[in-house]
Amino acid sequence: MSATNTWVIDPTHSEIQFKVKHLVISTVTGSFKDFEGSIQSEDGEFNGATVQFSAETASIDTNQAQRDEHLKSADFFDSETHPKLVFSDGKLIKKDGDDYTLEGLLTIKGQSNPVKLDVEFGGNMTDFYGNAKSGFELSGKINRKDFGLTWGAVTEAGGVVVGDEVKLVANIQVVKQ
Image (cartoon, rainbow, N blue to C red; front, top):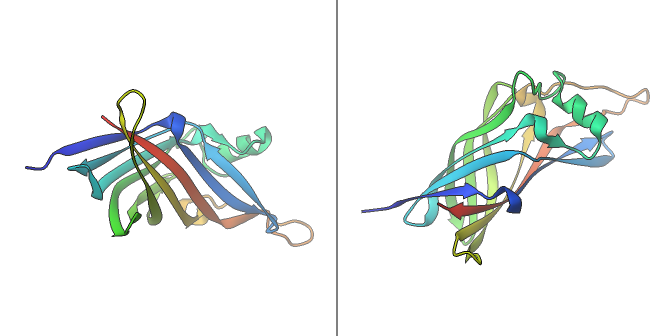
């Protein structure tokens, strides 16, 4: 008989970031500061595990307050109407070695689309307090316009202010419950 294990994100040892081109010449990095998620696995194995995650859109931080307020507005995340972005129905699929694929449904601003992320399993460890922990590094790309984040502007010189492709990067540590 298999045992189901629940693992929850340890927010003090995890980070959720995104990177997007600005003026097509440089990259702006941002993060979400308030998030939660869990993994349900069988017998301590992560292959086939189910994953769910959410982040508070108002917790966005790009290290520039005016830009953050614009990102929270209806032009982008519309945080007042859509307070969370949600990843649901996630499934971890082992490829080889420590490499996995995470497939699931990402919902931003009320629009849901399937996404596929690359995952590298960092290993297992027991902390100073006897808690079983595991680490993962996730990466992938989405098109922001697929999720209703369609605001755009062009400079007088014809440069695009915000790129459409958004790179997602997350370093996640989970603790077994």
